[in-house]
Image (cartoon, rainbow, N blue to C red; front, side):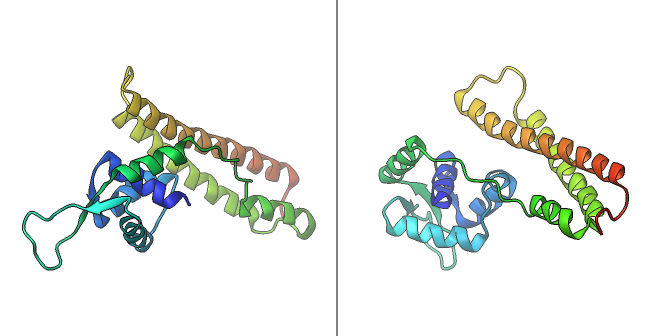
Amino acid sequence: MSLPHAILTALLEKPSSGLELTRRFDRSIGYFWSATHQQIYRELGRLEADGLIRALPAEQPARGQKKSYEVLPAGRAELARWTAASQDPKPQRDALLLRLRAAAVVGTAGLQSDLRRHLELHGKQLAEYRAIEERDFPPGEDAPHKRLQHLVLRAGIDLETFWTQWLTHALAEFEALGDDTLA
């Protein structure tokens, strides 16, 4: 149920068209809540039908003109309700961890190279997050909305830091175990 709330958040930050929302998801919100452009457009239709958002009037009506949307008071109230509601953490589900568990009974062939690939990918994501932090959150930024946005980014940085450290440790364990252990 979080996609509509992600869209409401993005629209409250800045009224946008579906295309602009898709681009913003690719650049920011999508780091922690991804959605395809089809999902975004479908959800915009639902939110509009539910009276939570509305299409802004076009300056000059034209066929095929993109619609920009803004959040209505009912949408703001729904987002506030959802934000204040309690939610339980979701259990961790990760195929890589399951594959490591399976390797204990079927062997580790091929897994070490994939661990290296994951380490590279998490390292790149960590570097990207740190670049965003340096660019968008200078020291001493005290605006409450910027501090909360930075907190979200810090979660991403901390998670990627965890994965790079854990994968480095896992690769060291593989080195200690030798090739094709348990195969």
